[in-house]
Image (tube, rainbow, N blue to C red; front, side, top):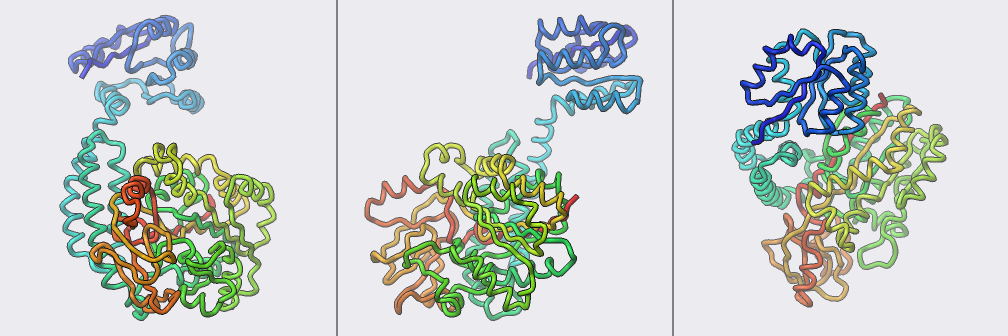
Length: 517
């Protein structure tokens, strides 16, 4: 590691000789000067790692010097040292992007701490995070072997997401690889858990909140809770880790009342899961009760064009027909901006439902566009891309306006998505559905170990398209590939984001309640 070079600017620099000797003994290289003008010249001539800057100097003041230094080297950390504790000086300094603020008299340990904080944070955080995860690794592995309830699986998945986000910026790539292998093992165990329990959840009282019970279980109580208008935002295809990536942005405008998770139904696909949310029914019940609204995989036409009608029927069934409500679906930038312009009109509603389709479009674009494949090559970059979109989207503008109008926000999704990596061969007739993570059709041939099979779809409340139809759902990070043109098919779809199958990422999804700040 190269020697760290410090520039110390103070008109009484001679009085600081003990501090400078202390730093030099710690192998820091210290250059000194006694005026702002001299400091600016030195910054132009040499490369320093950090500047200690006295606020109160004759000639150019510390704040004026700070401004000049930042104009020349914006990324150079400047630590302001002052005798004054006046608020306006602190505000000026912070507004000018100082790295730290020390009050005289300073002691050597304060100086050392500030240096560590500003120059060595990345390494120290990396080492500490690595150590903490190493200690946690064994506990997660033990939990994984014992977890046996839907609540425990939520806790385990949240823990894995926490460590994934903690480890993503550290220098030790091997830790991330270890965590990735833990996630793979967790998905393998989770698949077995779903295989054992999913069917029983439709008859047992001890079951998680699922897509078709979400509205009744979690949304209606929030609508009835107080008089505040409710904005229900359903971001299609939003994974739990993506929510955590832009949560800090939302926290500027909203306080989190609660955060929980619920389970998507199978298939974890929009036409099934999101229709189930709005209808409050499983797909086989939708087909039976609303044959004019429900479309099967093999039917022509859009499969999610009747969500508002499904919601209307559910509200009536729940005795909430008197609610003043609206439904909006945003599928492009133009429709998003149009709603922003007319947002104040929503204040009159008890409930405003907003379906936002961007994240789903992003995952599909990764399949079809090489540039998106590059930009979202792994989960870390996929999160980053989602965060970047959110910061610049009409959705953020809507959330800001919601805060001003006093809306309570419920933010959720219909299902998640997973980066698929390994193919599994499947054979079906020409009427077999096209989804890569689930298939429905007659006479399906597949690797049994790779799938959760539903030979009798009605047992898990899915429609039977014809007498011999069945459903299969891919496990973990597998995707279904046909033997015809197999190599081309595999290379095209490998490392793309898909949904419809059984994985933690697709099934366990966030439900967030937010109150305006």
